[in-house]
Image (cartoon, rainbow, N blue to C red):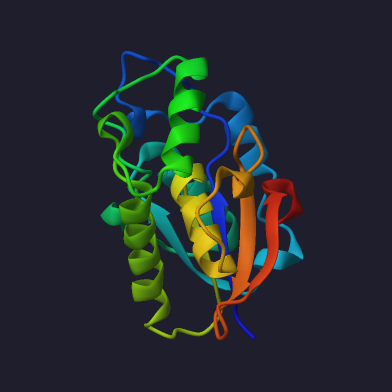
Length: 191
């Protein structure tokens, strides 16, 4: 049985002067990711699919180098589109994110609607899985759309209660054949 894992990038260098999609991993995020790759869980991984955002690509590159797997970058796997507001200070961001998950049918402050972001990330994942290639698949992306994906495959309504723990660098897994969630968010150190 093949396993599909969705991994979120870990900690990043936050710089309000740089567009969020261009943020890279922080020293902590890079160190956490570099500790991954020797574990048995990823031994059967034959595909690594990454968002096109820098932090996701950096995470994917580190793991891919350890596994000797080529990365495929998919533009539409990006985080929910928050360009309408740009950078928000942490407290304001958390309040808007709470509303984003609580009102999935509404565009909160111009952000992409949660239902649209969920449809987009599910479409991207299903496109890759439809190829039916042998081995496990690792998707590398972001917490917001990752939570929406988790909700979809878990068969639950969109709710921030299913969000990854703070700090990112978490993954969940599901079976490719039945699309059944095997476990909720775990730290990447468990890979």
